[in-house]
Image (cartoon, rainbow, N blue to C red):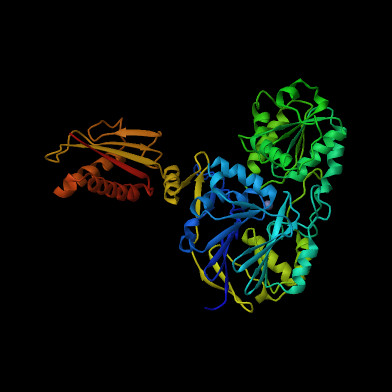
Length: 567
Ligand SMILES: [Zn+2]
């Protein structure tokens, strides 16, 4: 058998989120990350998406482990779903394991899963793959890059990273280990592209401290800081500055409370005794003694900040004199929600501080000069941009080509479902497969088929027609008039709901509806004996005839639901 390694991304390439890829050598496969994706605003009741793990079924016997680089939802969120299909051991850091545990517990599978906690520089042997975990800096804590030795050469997967020499929590990025691999020779570097369009260096997590100190010094009233619940360095800074200015901290919002609890329990956050107070205690304190650390920086309507701004959150409302700090970036797609929320906050007379006015947020991802540092440390034969929309992958490629002297053929742009084959000398995409995605309804942790989402979309855009036909069981003869109810169908109705039957006067039915009912009548007359006797055949027959007529007349394709009543 030829000695080749296959790299197959299931998500995260050409899109934001849903990071997941498979590495295959012979009859062995490992999975790197299992992330969620976040569909756009109009997703028809779909909360999140996950990679289509059905895609991995042919390799069921080959999968030996799942390795997680870090605990962000776009790298970890799909873990319960992949484990429900393939229950293999998971390797990750202590903090990632802490977040994974609470997720697996929610899905009631914690007891069935083998979670291995690893330290930086730990080496795990999994058949033909030998994996070393290398410390990297990011907005979250306890994050890894992976150095994966394979029989064809070493692959380095950066995970999410930036080059931060002075993180707030934990060790700085371990460039020495990257250089060690670089000296021994690296076949391919799979590298984070999220900020590949941004020139310069990404600032250290510490860079936001002065702005926070100024804001705390100036604020006379309450301070409300909204941040990503996973930005653990940032949370520590808020706790530290609060302590420094004699304020107590009240943590609000489910994900924020959960992350603070996990990070505190595992020793990542340093929280002085008595600093944290409950909501009830906070309500009794004077305005200049308290900081609220809350969720909702993206304007999410159900999160704490939005509710405090628009109505109230557990009896708490934003008021005149409050200072609201939005210590997060705007995730593309959330602009309108955030803008609306900022409007509410201004209406309440509070002061609001955004990222563009003060340095209160730094990115967790490598900018171009960070990419330069890491790529020069590793000096791989091939660079494969990962994590990001196509624009970012492309700019990553351009940067590596124009500024790091890489030849075009040594930078490989791949897409989800591509099979990238490496034999130690060459790298080529040898196959392109349709990988797709699975939608999830988070309220029930249920998978929603893409057909269901398509149907919801059709309902939203095209409306519905319900058709009720009563026929006599024996003879198949029509009893009374068919009845038709349309909702939201363009051209067919004028006022939202329309009920009509053939015999009714013009005031109750428009001409088109009457014609539609005539179509139903002639479809019934023209139906064969066999069709008339079989409900499903008859329904399909009526549906097709009605669909054809409605499309021809109005150009719309509503969901048509015929009902047959037999008497
Ligand atoms: Zn991340």
